[in-house]
Length: 233
Image (cartoon, rainbow, N blue to C red; front, side):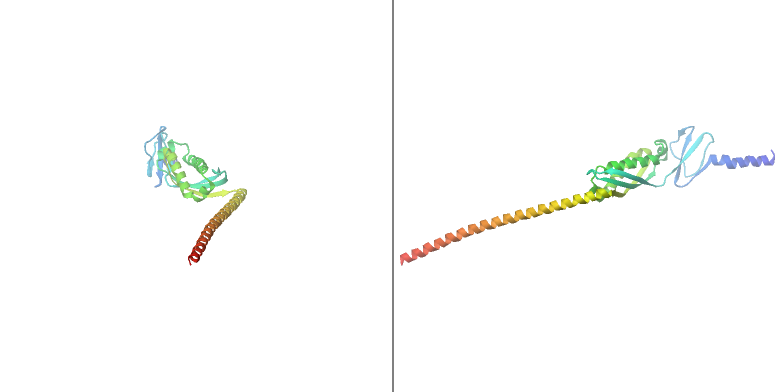
């Protein structure tokens, strides 16, 4: 074989065949290998993986924790307040085989599930709870997502609600409602105060009336005693 032909074959092997057969997986990667369409029980890697050309194919999976921003969602709270909510979720693949076989695209599926879960959970709470109990809501959403993505080989480690935004017109309506509630409470407190004052005045009048009657009776008894003493003398 002429030298140039041998060099051509070697070049072909190095450029075309070797990259297709020999794969290098980084420390944070796993390789899901399909042999004639069938997947193995365990993922390969990290390190060097040698594939059989035409028989085996491999899909790389990143096993690191991924951070995903949940797009802003329109949510109607339990007390009928329209809010816009966004969040961020932290998740990672713990079973590369299931992440490939059980769901078409685990990233898209996790994102879609996070959006629907966010709307569902927050829709069961009042606006005050969304603002004041954010840690509890984060935990509730995380537990639901973690349970539902387990079948995909996904572990959802954390969920953080970033913003709960209320429309300006809704803020004005809430402010008016709060002002009306404060006025109502002030009137109730004033009425209760007047009622208590009237009750105290009535009690005082009754005490005075009772005391005056007792004093009059004692005065009459004293007059009778004085009159009796004069008669005896």
